[in-house]
Image 1 (cartoon, rainbow, N blue to C red):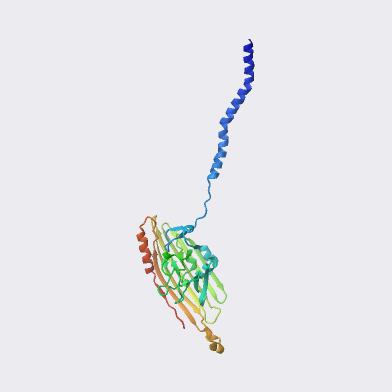
Image 2 (cartoon, rainbow, N blue to C red):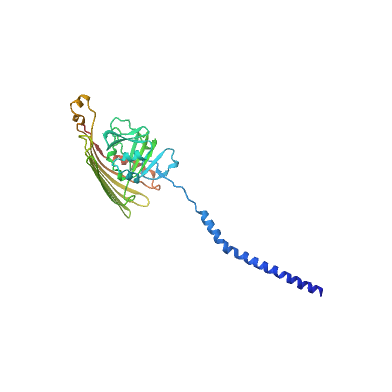
Length: 335
């Protein structure tokens, strides 16, 4: 009898403990359903990694593959087409001077349109006899003239430039690149689409106009731009006229891309040279006698930046043929 009473008393005391154990096991079983979304959200947020911006530049004059700028053992400074648009200047050298440290533009011919580029003491000048130390490439084609390695920046329309890379000395850019090289990648229908026109006017009879048009249809592209500028000059007998045209037709496949481009330019730049003091004593006008610098450019080129799957020999052949397809006629007169 005593044993039976003891069991009943022990059962009454164990009932609350059983209820607590059952509720604890139930809450333990339901805990993952309520906590798992929190863990999943934390895991998803921790898996998001923001990568730094990587700037890729060309490792050769050819407009093909590139490499990270941080992996190139030289200083590389790049400009986009927006930098040339903000300058609103008909000169390529003005934008390089404003945006590239250590780059200076000099009116070496006494005219704002005919400038020389000085980069770290080395020059790319339109004047014969200047020790040239910079190589300039346009779409992988060396535009230093064959005679004297002079560079006529006035024949390049700045609105047609899509990207500009300025390198320090690099032997891959060929001769007279001791001070560095300037690589200009021009626009095409794959890179720029739309229509834009602009007309400006200013003091001393300056009037200028520009247009550009680009379009892509499937695997074909077309781009054309032209500009014209006239300036009477702030001195006597120093008017200037500049006309430039650039066009590009492209076709691409998953493995290759081919572009045919044509350039044309005419420049009539009035310059003023020094005069002896005896002539100045007679009249100021002989000091401003008419002197002009005339330039003409007619160029047809082709470029085929193949992908890495195409043998490199094809790229090398393309690189050799490109300069041969460029025909430049430059005429300089002084009266």
